[in-house]
Image (cartoon, rainbow, N blue to C red; front, side):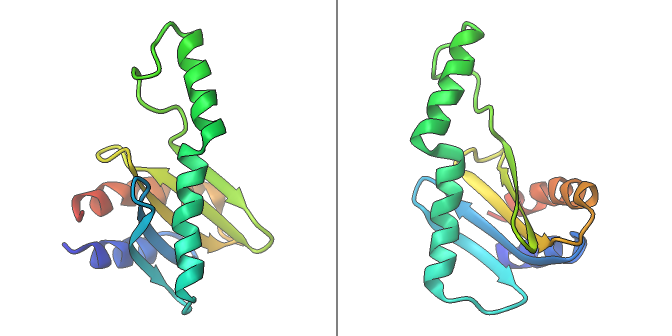
Length: 135
């Protein structure tokens, strides 16, 4: 299945999903996106950059390294502590999921604020493996 089809399928499964995207945080590129509305390319580019900042920003990496140190691990051991981030904006719920298969990638799902958060998280988590497999 292509990435575009996987994102479309995930968008149809996640309640009230208005956008789905897949970001390569190492390059800052948005590898795929599906939205119900059109958005200027610069907005989509900012989403990709913001996703990288959320998971790999300097302060986030420092917090992860402090957690590792407290557990007796080196900074290169143990993977990442921040794997899912949910942001509630005025009218939307933004779900950012780090790929388990490709830790430098993340899926982004945006739903209406009226969506059931528990269902959004469950369906987003369930959609991630198919999106990863399409890369």
